[in-house]
Image 1: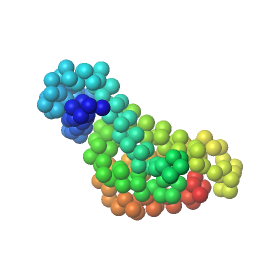
Image 2: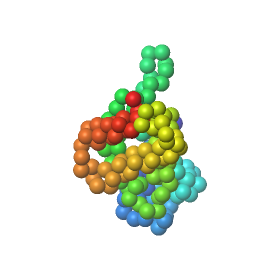
Image 3: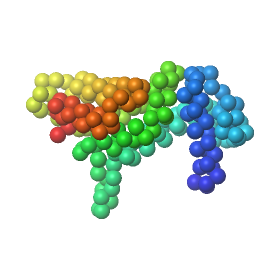
Image 4: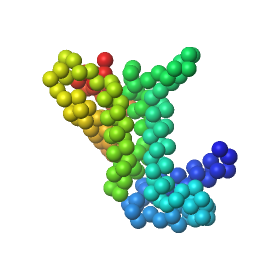
Length: 185
């Protein structure tokens, strides 16, 4: 991607997120986004069809970044899931991007953001969950939904309460809770 395009998109995202931190998504206009980014409104429309498109791309980019911190590639080129050993990278990512996640989760006009986080958690938990032991007599879908909702709820609580517990403690306790319920080894 051309540096100028990347710089322009970054300015648009930054102005958009700062506006979301100040007001409800529904009342934000493309003009406000453009003014705050110090660009022409036509430039915003060149990159995004409307504010909903911008919102979706912003959500997608940030959730993809979250996923990126949870994986690495080994010397054979195979992807390794870091969540299999610790939640710390993802919790630290949330901590680093606190302003963005706080804005998205606290803005009542953006339920799609929480829904996407829940979808990602559900997918990952569904793959990892063990249906033996304490989970033997339970419906897999029910346990998956329960644990994914709990995970997203804890992250949401932690972010919206301005991280009252350290990232290390949140990661350790979440890991313990999911391990206790045999969602992970």
